[in-house]
Every structure is written in C-alpha cells, then in structure tokens.
Image (tube, rainbow, N blue to C red; front, side):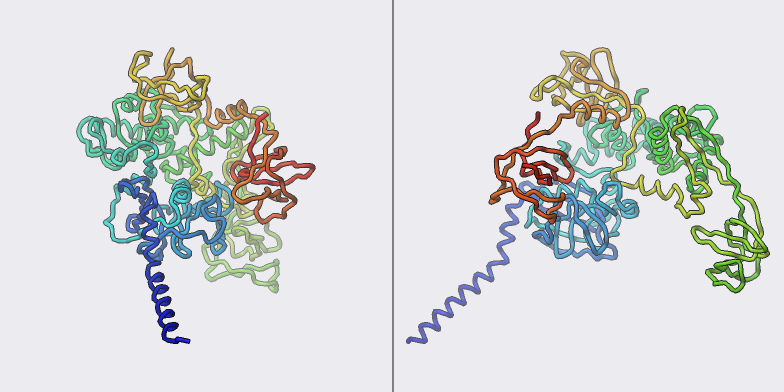
Length: 632
C-alpha cells in the first residue's frame, strides 16, 4: 500500500474542507443582498428605520424602547431563525418576565424586536408603565415597538435581514416628537418628505408669518396646539396638525393645505379630547367641550360660554378629588381624557337619560397624638400580638371605639390602638351616583367608604392604565360616517375637487370604503380620503350618524352571514388535517380529516385562527388554513 499517496489524498481532502469552512461566513452576507429590507436601530434617539435594499429609501420609521442602562448589544446582526414556534406570530409568552408580547422577531440570542408587553393575551392588558415610558430605554435588552410596527417586521423582514444597532447619532428631538405621534409608513403613499411636513405649495415645516400665527391661535382654540405663538411652523405645529388630521381620518403629514385650512376654520372643525393643558384664562371650543361634559356629569352648573373661569376650575377640582388626582383645577390632557372616557362609560351603563345624586358619607378619622411610636395590636389587649406601629401625626380610619380601644384601619390593614393616643376628627367622603331613568341600573363615580376600607386603588390609577393603553382611542360622541355604496366591488366612486359631477377627479374611492364626513350637502358630501379632501355624490353613499362603535356594530349585524360548511384543504406535505380537543397546537388530537371532505363550522375565531367544527359526529378545533369556507 502506498501510504504517501493516501496521506497526500487526505491532505487534499482536509484542505478542501478547510476552504469550505472559511467560505461559510461569507454566505449570509451574500444572502442579505437578496433581502428586501435592512434595519437600523438608533439607540441615541430610540428610533428604528427600515430601508429598502433596492434604492435605499425609507420604508418605515418608528419610535422604540431599547434596553435600560445600555444592555442592548450594538453591532451588525442578521435576523435569525425562531427560538420557539410562537415567534413572528401574534402572541409570545416571555416566561422570565411573566408577560406576553406580540410579533416577536429574534435578532441575536435572546434579543428580539417585539411589541410593548402585556399582562395577558388581551389588548387591554398592556403594561401601563411600559406604555408611559415608550420612547425611552426601559426594556431588558429587546427592542420594544408599537404593535403595528412589530407586526410589520415579523411579517416582512425575512430571516437573514441585516440589522445595525448603534448609539452614535446626534439627538433629534424634532424627529422623535413626530414619531411619538405616529410611525412613518411608505405604504400609505405618503413620501418621507411629506411625513416630515415639508411642502412647497402649502403651510408646512419651515413656514412662518401672519398666516402661521393665525393658525396657531385657531389650533389652540381647538385644543391641539399648546406651544408659543411665534408665527413659526415648528415641530409642535406639525404635531398639532397631525393630531387634527388623525381625528379627521386623513393621512397625517402635518401639512396645512388650503382644503384642510377651510375645515380648520369652519364650524365643523374637530375639537381635541385631550392634547393640551387647559387652565383658568383659556377659552375656545375646547373649553366649551369640557364645560358641556362637566355639566352632563353634574359637576358644573355655570354658563357654557367657552371660558375657563373659576367655576370651571372648581368643577375640575371636584372631578380630581373624586378620582384621586392631584387637586389643582388644571385640566391636564389625562384629566380631559378621563372626563370623556368616564362620561362614555356612564352613558353605556345607564344611558344618556339619567339622574345624578350626590352621596356623602362621614368618615371617622384620627391622627396619632403621641410623642413616641404607638403599638398596633391584633386584639384590644396589651398582651396580644403587636402587628405594627404608628408614628406621631400618622392618619388612621377609626372603625369603632370600645372600652378604651379603637379598631383602626390603614389601607387594607386593621388592628387595635389605645384610644387615648388618637385625636379624632370627621371627614366627608363624597361620590356621585348616576341612575338610569327607569331606576334599573346605576354607576358610581368615586370610591365609596367600603371600597376605600377594602383597599381599592384610586380611580386615577385605574384610569391611567386604561388611557395609556396603545389600543385606547377616544371615541367622539357624534360623528358622521359615509360608506361608499356603488353596488359593485369593482366600481369605485370619484372623489371630486368641487361639489359637481364635472369637477376634477382627485381619486377613485373603492366600494365599501368608510370615511368621516366633514360636511353633508344636498347632493355631495365633503370627506377626507388619504391626503385629499374632496366631494362624493350622496346618491352612492350610505351616510350614518352616531358613535363609531355604534355604526360598526350596526354594519356588522347587517353584513352577518352564517358560515355553515367548509372544505378541508391540505398544505405542504400534510396527508390529513388534525382535529384538536382544544384551540392549541399542544392539545390532544381527537382525529383527522382527509382533503376534500366537508365539515360543519360552529365557531370561527379570526384573531387566533382556530375554528370549532363538527366532522362525522366528532366536535373539535381545526386551523383555518386547513379550511376553505363555503357561505350559505
């Protein structure tokens, strides 16, 4: 045997293998060129930007929250494969932090893009502190995003997408402020320049002069602008106009076109429900809106004259006291949103025709009157267990007094103190009770004495969590919605520049599109569609008035179609589709369904993608991807 030949062949083989190994690191870089997007994370500004790899244009830009104390790694990475099956889907549970996140996409080891955290699989359970600190580095290292932004990355940025994370950029507060209002999304048709508010033929970023000054005063009266009256179209102005455009249902570019100015200066202009602080001396439609709400709540009986005077201040103070806010008579944005939210809750509970009653409870209180700490005992006996100590000047609630001992409460904790060490006084606890006209339902604003003794948190704390939720949006009491109804899905309706069938066509609005109506005319109605404001012919519109929720509910009832049968379809290499005992991949498999057979559909959960079906006497859950629905 020629050992030298064998050794030579082994060496050649090893050399070839070494060459292959050395080439491996270059393969992902080549693959990255084929990716549609690249991602940049600017930790200094807490901004994530998604670029097109074809032309370098910005496809999406969004605010984020990275890791606290610099714990997010910097460098260049590639989006990696899933670490668990739930990633890049709607919900992922992070056991280490005992929370859920939406649309988690893995960047590097345990670091991911994902939504703000939730306490449960419920959009209303977003963690309030995380929402309030959004835009600041507060995570454990991951990149937190708004839900829709996390979804975009999960669904569009493929494994291998290049991600660059750096902390070297200069601080850009103007851009951060714009992104705090909304993310930039190129798919809406808005250019990045428009998103920045840059316009050559309308008022926008960089504009200045008397027209801008007049606009600042008008936006202030409507409750959208709280900056300086300097005649400069600053970032604060862009933010104000974007918020107004949002309430109108228009594309949010912050540019005040001539058409938008006509709406802003009209009687039908929207009024903010909590964008700027209101205080004594303020006036305008935004104050009138607050006066009307306070009057309905039974807190204000002064003139509805659009002037924030001492009476309005007093009404706000009463509301703050009832809810547990700091009592200063100033209607902060959160206080305003709380007013409108609670009014909506009251109307939903007892209707709009109700009786308001003030219920006053007298509470026995006391301060600790001693020179040293006083023992709190489990029973009214000096030999019983000491369960706490009270310091001089501390305040307690007195539940009862007997034989020289006082049963006291501090929050949810109770005990006994010798009554000689307490200086009693009385305090009134006031709540408002709203009762329906038929007396069948009621709603209480404020915490009763029993609720306080049970240790319930102040209403302000509960409201803070609700109002901070990303899914929360203020619902206007009276809106007019138009739905395009041409009678055919492939036939749209012309949006015209003037209320005339001969006027210029600005856009074609697809059948079924819903828009807020700015003004209803005899033959044409003025609406906002995308970035345009124009006119649609009433003959092809379904126009309704009411709350957005009510309208959506009515339309859902009208469009309801019973799903009776669905045909089983297979995907990939599947030989049959599984029927599970529960709506979970880990649930017990009850049986299988072959391709082509029909099953009866009992319940469809569009959010989770699971369908409750009946198949040959077997009832269980199937995935909607394995079903082709037939409507009867």
